[in-house]
Length: 94
Image (cartoon, rainbow, N blue to C red; front, side):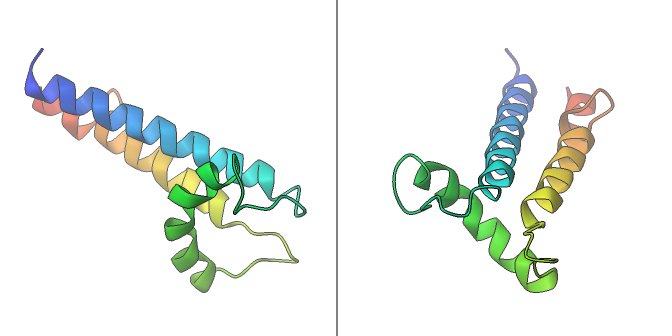
């Protein structure tokens, strides 16, 4: 397996994992009573919160709805397509 194949596979896996975590964060916004500092919820909150904080400063919650996770799903999807999609940069290297 070539180095670019490993890089391509790893990047795709990372993007898929982050997309899943942000989608779970979107679902958790429907349940404000969930304590994000306790297990298993902290396993979702811990890796996503550093990304959400700066976006919340730029785009505050609208009508009490936090749209920062939705923005990150869009960003990650775009990055995934640009890097590891069918015409992605990492695919073109290999």
